[in-house]
Length: 306
Length: 125
Image (cartoon, rainbow over all chains, first blue to last red; front, side, top):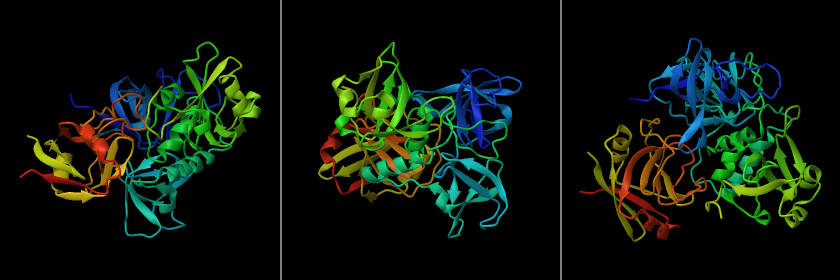
């Protein structure tokens, strides 16, 4: 049977474990799976009166499995062909304009990480893009990232870090995966630990898994003294050292960036401040701190697990 | 019906086939093609002037020897081993690719060609 796809038609929407609307407050809601951005493709599975049951094909658990969940029907529409996206919003927010002019009417605002199909359109400063409802619109060229095949890995690491720093100060939201957009009516925006890293890589054209544990599964394990910017630091639960529930992005030296917990914002932190020991001292403890185990992984080098 | 092609990198020549999908046919129309390959783990990729959306073959479940087309970067990807996103021996692309063909034979021979400055794809006449 031919696969049927949907596409998200609102700036940000929630993917729910059950067909129940999300809270509009910053709470830890167990029914919240993740968030979906405008233009994100979904594989249709089922529906009821107001909701579609879908798989978020751009948010993997593994290469063969995507995030399943419920999305409001008012947030998505059916498509015959999957669009050929060739640009992704690289700033925290970007405005979609009616015309290629600085003072043009603003149609709506989209979050960092939103993918678009753009055309040159013959303008020096703006790309033309077609909206999900067929309207032509424009976006500033400086707001998007175009794939750059062959980019040197050092530049890629630098770009991922620059992207991640754009999230500093944004609120933590369990199951969030978006930056604040004024036109996301009735949807709370924010990021959790793994959507922070997921979006930072997505903006740089690498689709890494959505969850911390799955990001660890996809990573090549590395030792702490070869950590480079944009590598990931994983933290296990106290009960099971093979179960990863937190991820942070390594910056340099003793610093990393993380989205920690409900009530906090994305911040830069140090090992000493967070764990009470420096990275080198943590090594002396086999990286077991307060009963949790810390691991280091890279999604930018091949090698797999030991 | 697949079309037979050759992939030539340095002194390595591999036989491959391109499938009969619209995307694969668009690639075929651009042959012969010579490009500078970039390397990402055990994957070569290079640009091709083909514009095609993700189609019914789109996947991230890749096998060694698969030939993919990556729409965002308008690039061909040739997979011959694990990439940085792999957690086993299978390659994992940066994001979904259309499968447009496969290498017939031992694709891992391309590991000997890492650092190659050109890659050539041509039809088998």
